Image (cartoon, rainbow, N blue to C red; front, side):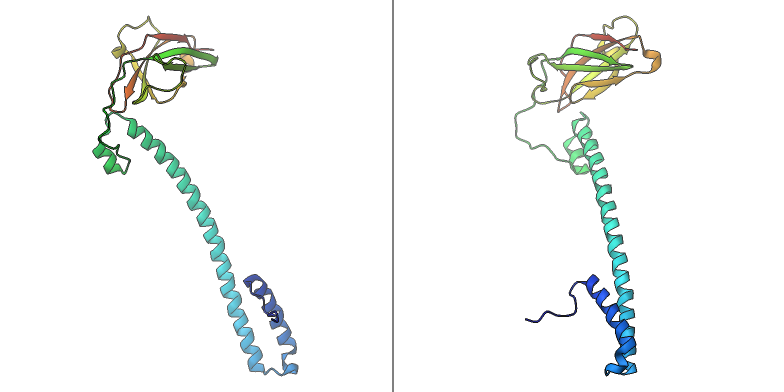
Length: 222
């Protein structure tokens, strides 16, 4: 089969057509074309050039818009997933809330989640960074593992900055509801050198809390 002299790809066709039109304009009359035919070709070439330019501009705009759309979705989805995880773990969230928000509703019919009976055991408090305390804790029932007890959503952490060692956990300030250790606590400059007291307890996915741990303490490093 004889190869077609007109290129198939648009970019190649555009280059070929411009070359052909230029030649026809210069030599068409001496090679059997009328002035009408030469003019009609030039008109069609101009129309093609305009439409091809519009196409390329639209293609570039589509590519840019697609990139922007993909980036915007990635950022929005990541933030939505992070927010959804917090909402799912919050003890105030009901199955009706989950359904209304478009979140996964846990399947019914499984065994009730037990109330935690162990406590978060503070293994160590890292003081290697200025103004930062990192709390490393595990479950008292499985101190050789990092996993939370079954059914536990997070550790509730409370603190007291300065003063004497507290005796009432309910009087201490809520610090965090942390799903994974270690927890990083950042402090202001005026807190450097002060002793911070911590107490923790496990909270299950139904918002039911277990017993409080022993109080731990560390000095905010300078």
